Amino acid sequence: MTKLKAGFDDGFLWGGAISCSQADGGWKQGGKGTSTQDLRYLDPSWDHEQVELKHHGNPFSREEFEAALADEGTEFYPNRRGIDFYHRYKDDIELFGEMSLKLFRTSICWSRIFPNGDDLEPNREGIEYYRSMFSECHRHGIKVFATILHYDIPVNLVLKYGGWKSRETIEFFVRYAETLFSELGDLVDFWLPFNEFNAGRFAPWDGVCLIPGDEECTSQAVFQCLHHQFVANARVVELCHRMLPGAPIGGMIARFCTYPATCKPEDNMQALQDDQYSNWFYTDIMARGEYPSYMNRYFDRFDIDIKMEDGDEELLAANTVDFLAFSYYFSQVSTTEQGWEKTAGNLVMANKNPYLPTSEWGWQMDPVGLRVTLNQMYDRYGLPLYIAENGLGTSDVLNEDGTVHDDYRIDYLRSHIECLKEAVIDGVDVRGYMVWGFIDVVSCGPLTMDKRYGLIYVDYDNGGKGTGERYRKDSFAWYKKCIESNGEDLS
View 1 (cartoon, rainbow, N blue to C red):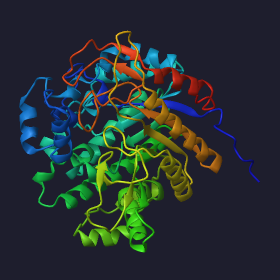
View 2: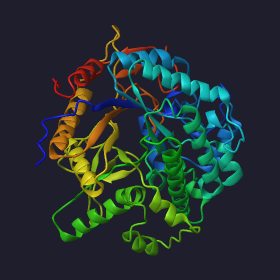
View 3: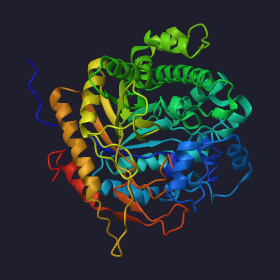
View 4: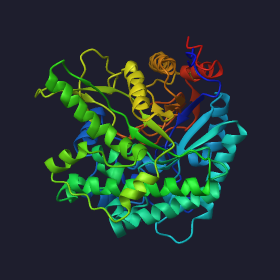
């Protein structure tokens, strides 16, 4: 009988995560082309209500797309500025090392490697940037967890081919991945082809680069794009296993932990289906290698007909992932009742749980849901798990003495890590935990800086004004203590 664990293994990886589009900046520098995330618009004069209305009402439109293509500026495009990580990465990574970070998750910018996406040769300056940055991580004893695509594809692929609507994009993605494996394979410890695979359904521009109003049937277009991504994912898994034997490569979703609103059988059935359609569909394909049968009824209901080519099903079956990762921020409830109160959440508006507290931005905080999620995923797949994102977005105040007192963030992280430890004792094989936005970055949803996740404060406002200086928040010292005690000292 296996001995019950008392806590985290010695090799547990305490980490942090950012994305290139939200952090790098370096707009059109170093040979970088325009990416789809460079086109997202924010007016820095908008108040909180206007920002949220834009984010939840019409996050991206054809008019915005055309205007952004013609605009070479950065004032209204926060992702073109980021936090200037492109120029400041050495100093930032030194701070990560001071925090004793074990694992750094970031994404590689496709348009920095292939500016147009369909280029025949890669941009050497882009490759050297990542070689330098990843080498800097290793110099500080930090392993690299590289996301190959975190929403931002070269915009030329959308203009010329229709983006993920075209199977040609699969070929360009495989060429891009092959280049990364060849040029950076000696510096990357973990590979992840796609960030939050299910984002395509809930945030079409981010996930599959579709402008919903442009499509005759958005659902049909989304699921066809997702199929092309599944094929691309399997191709890249096969390529990684061949080119970099022993290098772990995984799959990731935005995890929506779902509870039935009541003990009514109908609510329980609704929770089961919501879990299937929002979560399991994506991980079932990546980890089990086939389209699950429960999706047949869903596709029939919404008249979705996925066009596959000969060999697609065999490809998916033969190239499953080595591990699974997920982002976790909140839980939600499922019900057949109409008029249930809604609240905000990652990528979605969710049914509100009356038993949970809510963050400043309306996201419900549920550390027990993290334990539930870990148990459910490990029970279903038996694969190693990584928490690729977890954190709290709030307003922070930078005091005159350069301090930021964020006890609320410490409380959030402590409660989630305590439940993470319980999952380890439950027997779940979870190997890493990454705080999202452990340095302040442009928030993905609202595109603002005032929704801060970091343990390091970055002095920029929503319009990019500020010194850009970095300041350690109270949570910085707390997480350092957590890491150095391997999760034992959470005081």
